[in-house]
Amino acid sequence: MPIIDAVLNDFFWRALIGGLGVALVAGPLGCFVVWRRMAYFGDTLAHSALLGIALSFLISVPLHVGVVLTCMVLAIALVLFSRTRALATDTLLGILAHSALAIGLVTLSFMPDVRVDLTGLLFGDLLAMSRADLFWIYGGAAVILTLLATLWHGLLMSTIHPELARVEGLPVERLRLVLVLMFSVVIAVAMKIVGVLLITALLIIPAATARRLAHGPEHMVGLAMMFGFVAVTGGLSLSWYLDTPAGPSAVVTAFLTFLLVYGTAGKARI
Amino acid sequence: MSELLATLNQVTVEFDDRLVVDRVNLTVHRGDIITIIGPNGAGKTTLIRAILGLQKASSGEVTLSRKLVIGYVPQHLALESTLPLSVKRFMMLTGRTLPECQAALEKTGVGHLLDASVHHLSGGEKQRLLLARALVREPDLLVLDEPAQGVDINGQAALYELIRQLRDELNCGIIMISHDLHLVMAATDKVICLNQHICCSGHPADISHDPAFIETFGPRVAESLAVYHHHHNHRHDLHGDVVESEPSSSVIDHQECSGHAHH
Image 1 (cartoon, one colour):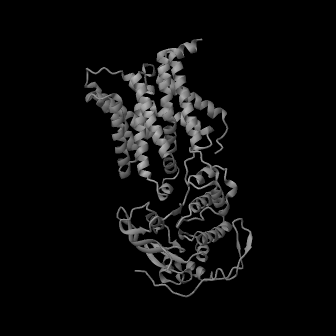
Image 2 (cartoon, rainbow over the protein chains, first blue to last red):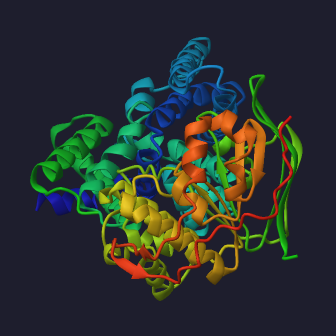
Image 3 (cartoon, chains in turn red, green):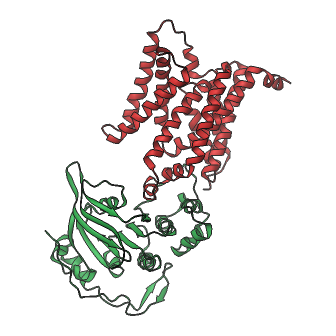
């Protein structure tokens, strides 16, 4: 059977395991992106990943380290900046997202010795998943899932009603900071799968799909993980059989699942 | 004197050089029901946000007693509809047991909504849910920002009566903002009339004669409050049904005129 052949193939197997790891963290964080209306924020961080890549080449550190650190710095800067309210948040995000992307691309062009697969970085290169990539994915996933499990109650309550959460004694600001730092990690981790330009899609679409069927926050997280995995598997299969780019194929699969669920499921009950 | 819960000392809040709360002094004791009234933009919400620690005071200080559990009923419950949340789950997030949560919901008259989605509640139901959520935490201090908003007219009187009962049961202090002057007066120990600064404060019956009060609300409101001192021989419960009550319960004490704090 061709499917079994494909699964047993090493490349495919690795890609699938990597995709599962990404879906595990993209599910819960995607739910927070949807709940807290942070889609544009996530997009901005993802765009800045390219700057991170350029900087990692510049100072010769591993790509993932450069990306995580750049995203973290930008995330903290954004949180602090948005408090001053000098500019509307979406304007600020628009400025930073594209500036970071552009600076990243310009910086890379100054380094002719560095040969980077730009398409792979922007749109993902699922089939080139290495053992090191798997290590980064599962390391990042373990950190994020542990943090989420530990801080779940506080994160959920401060998402539902930040003021009530504060009055009830939860460190709302610090939790927000932890959340944006987790986004930085997930971007570095998911970059390989779907590329920096499509990461937000992998966060949002499975979570939005899950919303229609979910009857509680945790249920929604579980469903989002599942839909994320469906997207990655679908993208991988499309890429394998039809030779389409893996990242966009995963997003197309996620979108089709979204349409299917919204077309067939009734109105959300809760 | 009962236990002191909160002290405000010369609390001032400014937004971009606009004075919103001006040198407010206030003490809240266990068992107090303090109602803050005042025109729109008087700084009522800002003042209670300063008490709750949600708004930093520009000067002056808010001192809360140690380990104070605060129950807060915000003005609106605006929830993101992308987050699936049932009434039960919202209540259980307080860390209390299901029977405790159920009892609190019953008390505020929304026990039947346990399994409903919070997104499908009406304004009045949300208000009662918020009150139930605040009281299940057994607060020492209950802070309510226009608790009767969206509650129907029969329910409003019952809601204020419930708040008074809660004070007795929980032995907590209560601070609330209200526009429903008539309804509030009967269930309040102390009224604070705020217009940036405290115009006047004191017992509800006295305050309607206060020149500062008349200046802020106009003679008509003051007059209508002054004639409100009639006796009820019944009250309404949360469903609007008539309940007999002891005739002397709503008699307002006309003594102990408070000092006039206008400046």
